[in-house]
Length: 366
Image (cartoon, rainbow, N blue to C red; front, side, top):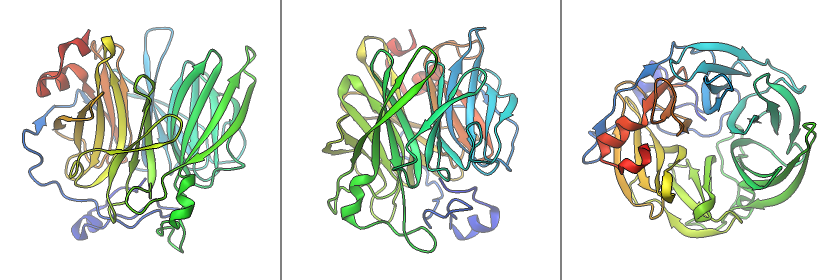
């Protein structure tokens, strides 16, 4: 994802891409008054800033003692930042720059399944798997195929068996800002089958890649990805504003359905996306519109993808990753939405506050 928009660059509305490895020269747009009915939902916390980290993606992990961790990838310090998910207090940093297991190079996408933490490393061209709470390395996969990986979504297909979907946003040109030819864009998402034994031994199998290659529907610049097995749905964010930044719908088998979110859903880059799964099978998708001076979060119906409203925080801006934690915690009894603020801190929203502001179904707060 793009590095922090500094004041001088804001004056010219030009956003530089990832510091060590530019991905795209594009605009970070200044928010207009926003969509009709835009609501303001105050954050419950904003963490202390750490601009040196260049925070990107988020994941949560509930510990056995009742506490919850919020884990963020810190790209520039090649580490993971661990926060108390109730208060936003920084608890520790994990890892350092390197190629060994337990070390990272430009970590980006994160996902948690049970006690396994998946860390996508752009510059190590792999996905590393760690065991929580000790961040104990289990193994890695993907280094034989991945070129510039970013996002990750994990789906359980059988006991002890997972499928991992990894977005691979390799680019060409001296500044890494040139989208590959259409015939290469069928490699934008790669799939792996993972198996875990009782002793934490992990095996992986590459299942191939997918992506539409048509002029109108190709995935040009990809990062965020999330899925909904109940509806056989993947939503994949295409960030390329030079064409159309949107979320496109694929099946879990990797087939493009021809659907995307409604026109003009995003004024800037479509970024983080998370599923709010509610009891009884209903729910919502929450997707980031990466704007300044404040991010706009768009909410869509889980089944129909119809817009259900939009909100902003009082502080949160230029958001990359988000994480939705539906289980109740001490500070967030009905669950929380966490977001990265301007690459330098994390923020927490109460799901109850969001539901009341947008008049969403109360059953999601049970």
